[in-house]
Image (cartoon, rainbow, N blue to C red; front, side, top):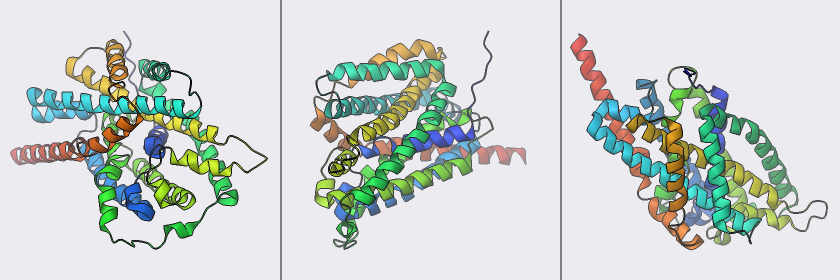
Length: 366
C-alpha cells in the first residue's frame, strides 16, 4: 500500500501563485472600464484582494492540516459541509471550464484558426488530466519549469515595447479626470474577482506545504509582486493602445506586441505572447480542475483517480455551453457579480465560525 504523503515546497507555492495570478489577466483588459485610470483599478483590486489573502492565511492558520472542504465539514458538520462542498465543486468546475474555453478561443484566434475548437480544448483537458493523475507534486513542478522561461520572455517583450514600441505615457493623463467613481465601478466586482479573488483556490493547496499552515511570507511576496507587475503591465498596454482601444479589446497584450511589426530583426513576437498565455492559463485551469476533483474526494472518500474522468468530461462538456466568444465574454462579466460570494462571503462566514468555536473551546478549558 502506498503511504507516500504529497508535499510541496515554499518555492513551488510561490511560483504557482505568480503563474496562476497572471493567468487570464492578459486575455482581457482588467479595469478597462476606468479608461486611462485602468491601472488604478487594478491597483485597487490588488489592495482589496490582499485583505482576502490575509483572511485565507488566517483560516489556514486556524486549521493548518485541513483543506477548504475539510474545514467546512469540520466547522459546520456533515450536512451543511456537504452543501458548501457541492457549491464549491460547481464554482471550481466553472472556473476550470472558463479556462478551457479561454485556451480554445486563444488557439483559434492566434495560431490554429482552421483547427476545430473542440479538438484544441480536448487536448488541453487531457493534458490537465494527466497532471492531476500524477498528483500535486507533479503539478507544482510545472510552474518551476515554465515560470523562469515565461519571465524571460516577458522581460524581452517589455524591453522591446519600451525601446522600440509606440509607448506614450501621456495616454495615462490626466489622472482621475472623471473622478473616482469610474475606478471603483471598474474595480468592484470585476477586477477584484479576476484575478485577485481567485486566490481562494489555494485554501485547497496550502495544507500540502511541507510545514504546518501556509508559507505566509512567500504568499505575501508572490501576491504583491504579481499585483505590482499587473499594474505596470496594464499601464504599459494602455499607453501603447490608448484607453479607448484597450478598454474594448480581447488579447490586448498580443495587440500591443503587434505594434512592433516594423522591426526587421525579429518577427512574430505574438507567438511568444501566446506561449506565455498557454503557460499561465494551463496552470490556472489545472488548479481549478484539481480543486474540483479534490472536493469530490473529500465529500465521497473515493480515490482521486476515479473522479478524474467524470470531472474532465463535465468540464469539457460545459465548455460548449457558451456558443461563441461574445457570449463567453458576456458570461465572464455576469459571473463577476456572483464570484465574490465564493471568494470572500463564504470564507468570511467560515472564519467567523472557526473563531467562535475556538473561543468556546478556550472558555471550556478555563
